[in-house]
Length: 438
Image (cartoon, rainbow, N blue to C red; front, side, top):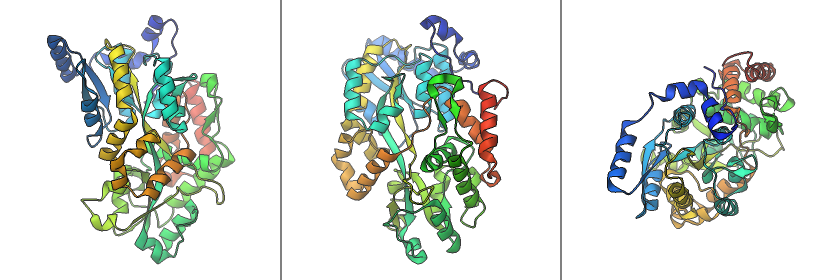
């Protein structure tokens, strides 16, 4: 199924009618009774209830919503689907229909430009933009920016590190105090009965890995994004070929988990926690993932910088996170702006990180004292160093098509070879120009 990018704004009303025709057509059947009930209750009481659409988590956003509710408004949460693409579709359908029952949204970075370009996001006051830019990591600000304006408020900034089992690397004789490459960890795992766990299902998480491999080889997936659909794809490049080589090597080796082609974050974590666990590329929450379920695994976990694609060249770990935006169609835009300022304060970023393992989008958020009781100081520093070097996915309204095209042509991992980058680029170019469908 093709997911065309949402069009840019003409005059506002004209463009709203034109945007995402297919998504808008489906919007009529997506109204949620729970939201309507909440709004009805707020109308009866005279105190507005702001509806915040959140990602599934371990209660961090609910706690922050409670912290940021005031005498003037209450913040209530509605949980989006687990899958990032489904989150995009659900929000876009309702926004295309100008649904006023969405006030605040947690938005995955690759979809920020698309929503902003469509006019779905209320403009952040300049004073708030300045405050957010001052407090946030550079990568978080970049991911939250479209057309030279900060369009969402950075809430958390996630990155991946290389997790390893200390008992395994001792057996394999690897010095993890020095940078390691993907080739090295694949060989070490294959030679010593271990597995390298990654995310390689046909979904956004696989594209995150591909993007970081390409960035680690000095490339980018696309450039010239200011040209819209005429952007320049860079998959068919030396960097793309090196990235494909890493994937092909893992998929064809004894280090590949049996579920490689369907592995998402949870499955990869399961492999790492098994008797064959050796290496895992995954997000920051992994540190607390085994606290209760497998304390023996937790004691065996080590951590290092994300692996290099090319030996001697700096790795560029994945960048993930969430920006919090206000719907342009909300009936409570002013209140929602005050709410997101509170939601994304360093203090509440720390609260969320404590409960979910999704790290703050600001250095000040890392100063939240409970984090120091959960994470070793050198691990917190590794997270921040990794964020500084992280590679965001291409910021473009056409990311959904690009990502979908990569998933269609790089999956399954066992089919990736030296021809994949060129075939992928040709396919995506045809999709962008309307010649093919995803």
